[in-house]
Image 1: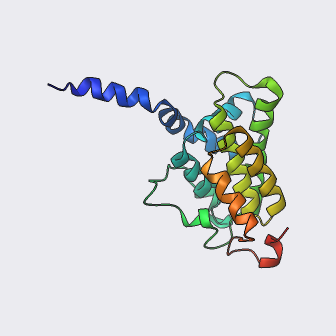
Image 2: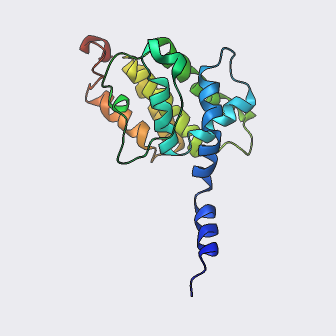
Image 3: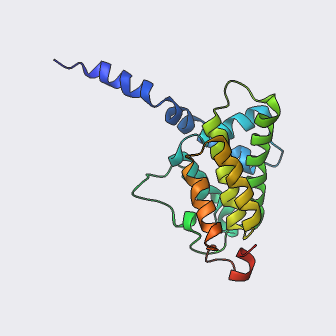
Length: 188
């Protein structure tokens, strides 16, 4: 006879990264768009939320909102793989450039904190790579392929299997930019 309680606990223990990412998603969204620079706790929230792909895709949607809707944005995980956000591919109306730039820089700040040994045991290297992958996507979405490529390569140095960083590198290599920016601004 199978005990469902044991199955539940085995599943919960098998996916602690996803559970932690889900729990910190709201705090990470706030840290990426707050009026003040992120402190150590905010950096941990960013890297923890970026450890799981579904929550990172939720942050893509959150950071990629159109400027006039930024104040109403709510961060939610994406129900991947069936509902990948159009924003991920650079489709739709132009997002708030300021929001993307600030979010990308805050992801880089979380990585720098980790890379300079100021990180804590709470920082998961996959989450740090995920934060850099998100920073790479933000740069790509802004039309800065050189910056996007650099950030994505740093992410892949930490976790060579990071899917968002791999996508950004591929898009940069193929000179594929988001539809909301002119082609000339995406080649660089």
